[in-house]
Every structure is written in C-alpha cells, then in structure tokens.
Length: 98
Image 1: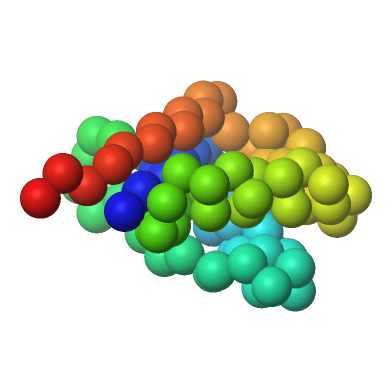
Image 2: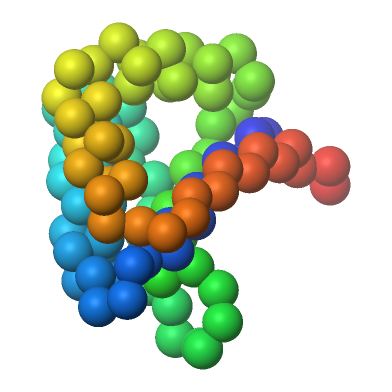
C-alpha cells in the first residue's frame, strides 16, 4: 500500500481558509471519481495546520490519481488558490512495509 500525505502550513490567521480549500479539493477529487482521503487539523502547537492523507493499493494507482489531478483544470485552480493561503507545502509518499 502507498500512502500520500500532504502538509499545509497556513499563513498566520488563514488556518480556517486552508481547511475550507482542502475540503474543496476533496470535493473535486470526489467529482473526478478519485478517493477522498482523510483530512486532519492541528491540535498541538507545532506542525502543519492541515494534513491530508490518502491510501493507494499500488504506485501505479497513485500515478493514475496524480494524472487525473494534473489533468483537471478545476483541481489546478484549487491548488493555485491554496498556495495563496499557505507559507509551506509538503508532499510525502510512503510504502507500507508490514
């Protein structure tokens, strides 16, 4: 299994907007027939304001998902808007090893 994690570090005071924008991206994913993944908000003082995770059965499935995202104008617009709200973005890809 492959796990994609994206971390969003909101600009000061923009945390709620980052969450709203992540929810919009999730809705777009759903409209594209992609898995919604799971969204988390920060409870402690350090770390990303919003985190999103999604599991894929294989690297091929992950690549297909990325192709669908990259081919969507609506997703590209949501991504561009997100980057106006955040100071930093991280994407991590992990493989479950048992």
